[in-house]
Image (cartoon, rainbow, N blue to C red):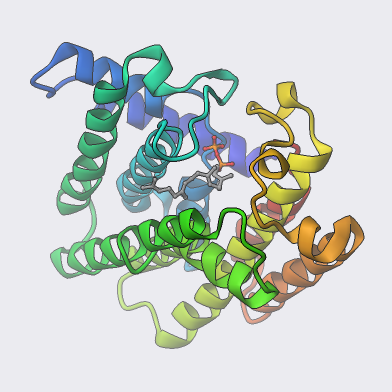
Length: 290
Ligand code: GRG
C-alpha cells in the first residue's frame, strides 16, 4: 500500500535519527534501537499521518507525534514478550528484546521508550503548546491503566477463562484499541481548531478499526504461517487465549471483521478524498497478512 510505505520510510528515518543518541548507557540505547527499528509495519504512526491528512494538514506537524506513538507501541511489545507476560522468543521475525539482550535490559528499554514518547510530545515541532498538552493527555490515558496497560491486565486475568463477546471486546478496546484510537485522535489534534464533529467521526472510525485489527490478528494466528506473521503461529490456541475465531468460529469472525470495516468506512462518510488514506488504512488492516 503506497500510503503506508511512504509513511513507513518517513517514520523509520525520523525514529532512526531521533534514537541515535542521548542515552546514558550504550547498551540501553542499543536495546531501544533494536526494539523500535526492527521492521514494524508502522500502522499506528501511519494512522496519525492519515488523520492529519483527512483534516487537510500536512504530515510535517504530525510526524513527531506519530513517532511518539510508535515508541509506546514498541515498549508494549518488549514488555508483552517478557517471561512474566507472554514469554515469547520471536517478534517481527527476530529474537525478542530480552533474548537478544537480557531481561533486565529489555525492561529498562521499554521503560525508557515510554518516557521518551512523552518527551517527544512536549517538543513536537509545528504543534501549538495547547495541542501538545492535549496529545500528552490523550496518549497517557490511552497507554496507561485506563487503556493499554489496563487491557493487558484484563488479558492476564482471562487466560484459561471463557469470555463472552462483550468481555472479549472490552479487553481489546483497552489492550490494542485504545492506542489505535489515540493514534487517530492525536493526528486530528495537529489540525488547529479541529471540530468536535470531525473528532467524533474520526474516533468512531478508530474504534471500529481497533477491533477490526484484533479480529484480523486472531484470524492470522490460526490461518497465517510463522514465517509470514513473524511470531509463532497458533500461539493463542496454545495458550488457551480467548479469541474471536474461538468464540464466533472462523466464518463468524470474518463476518464480524467485514461489519467492523463497514462501520469504519461509514464513519468517514462526511469526509472527501482527503480521507482516502484513512480508508486505505482500514482496507489494509483487514487484509494484512502479518
Ligand atoms: C505489557 C505494557 C504492556 C502492554 C501490552 C498492546 C499490548 C499490551 C501488547 C502488545 C502485544 C500484542 C501482541 C498485542 C496484540 C496486538 C498486536 C498484534 C500487536 C502487534 O501490532 P502490529 O501488528 O505489530 O502493529 P508491528 O510489529 O507491525 O509493529
